Length: 193
Image 1 (cartoon, rainbow, N blue to C red):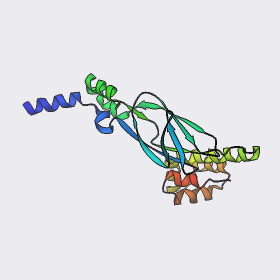
Image 2: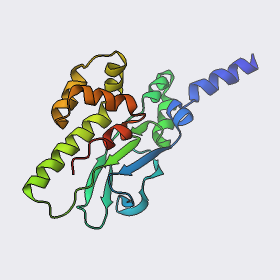
Image 3: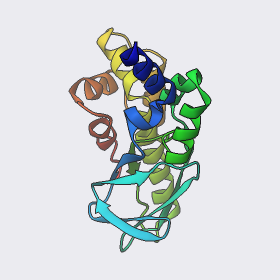
């Protein structure tokens, strides 16, 4: 009886977001230019490619990437409710523990790829850069869907969309998807400069 009471009390007070995900989140940065400096909320944090632990909070985080000869790139990393925290529906104490520890929050992206823009580009170079950036972004955010379409042996809507963005033929896109192990591998294939 005593063990059951202790177990029930522990479960009622458990904060799922904090227990399963902790109060920090590992964020990995990679950039199109090696040795890009990463600043988080104004403080130099690391040099890409790199990873860092960030406290989970309800606040957005400003990330600035800097490299000599390139425009500074600013990204806002937004916080959302950690899906694991929904298990807290068993009690108010669980929600309050997660809220106080930060475990109720998570950042949308664990892996951030930064496309650095060279300074002083001509209009033609700018247009090519924007095309490359659009193709890379699409490949990064839709990698799983692209892999599924390729595994099924069809050139579906995602493959066709990437073909339209990049100007590559759908069969070439399918070949690139097959040989890419990660979304970063696929994004690296779209280098138009």
